[in-house]
Image (cartoon, rainbow, N blue to C red; front, side, top):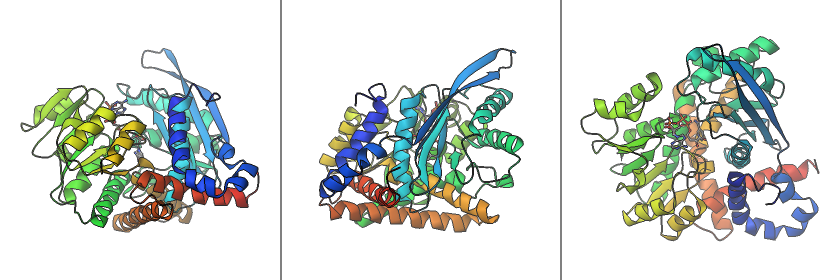
Length: 433
Ligand code: NDP
């Protein structure tokens, strides 16, 4: 704690994992102590921090900081997204990298955990400025990554445009045409269904969760936060399953649309125009726009936080319970604070943490890596079917893991235990390193 005191998000993520794997640690106390398993698993293999200098449209040089944390590669090459947001600093990247280790393990695919990004804000920048930033960022990052070493992807602020510029620069410097990034465009090695994967996967998980408790998504009212990649495709799949999503949000405000969010309009506003939600409200008579935050105050059956970390607080959890919410499944990474999570669990709400519920994105990224390796492309239906299988398997694995340790229904414990066991097995087999 003292060593990482300046990184509260990292400490929060570690605390949650360590607390919930306690029964596994107690059952293997001597071995884990001798092998320093907990010390090794919480210390990244290595971390890079570098200057990213670029020139803006006024001819002014700008400087940002770039990061890549390679956390653990016991079960496969490092894999995890690049976040571009002004709030990025080492603590955020370390928390995300640490979570990624267990999430990637849960997918059942051979991928280790890492994460990266920069405090660069793509919002309001021209395409040329974003390209200049991405080229400069990759000019340093390329030294540390590779198709069999570390394979970054998108995250907040890093979408198809940014991945394209990053890939172009990697190829230019290394002369390699390889699957070094995922989330690529379909014309240069991307996978069908990757764009939809995190949101769709979240709903496949939610559907399986409800099914196993004798319920169905059809007819359910959902509240969703965020209006980015995860939120958009979560809403789309929820509607396909017969549910109705009545909210979405961005960092300035939120929408309540009792007729259900119009996904085509939301995509137009966010993906095409890169505009604010006020434009959604202006084009949709049934929608109300509210400044600030507030989606969790809306009555719902299912809540899907899909924006960012620590966006669902204790008072929000109380409002959800009071309004009869039965399930919270995290599309974002660590959107629910520890006390809010505990409150939801204690009040009978089924709660599935992001490392399980949003694993569909990275799982499909791993499928993109497989397609790149065999130089073939699979159909949308093929990838989507594999994604669904993976999410259903994850649900049953975390459910079983929780049951094995007497924590039935505690999916936080189940996810941490199932993810942890596999990584630790591999670490033990590979010796102290
Ligand atoms: P996007 O950048 O596409 O969208 C993020 C959304 O969240 C935007 O609507 C954004 O609003 C909002 N948001 C971001 N930061 C804040 C903040 N500090 N306060 C309030 N709202 C905020 O990102 P993604 O949809 O890709 O990612 C969302 C979450 O899902 C993240 O936690 C990410 O790590 C996680 N995730 C994403 C995966 C993926 O495949 N994309 C995979 C697994 C997890 P605004 O536009 O105003 O900034």
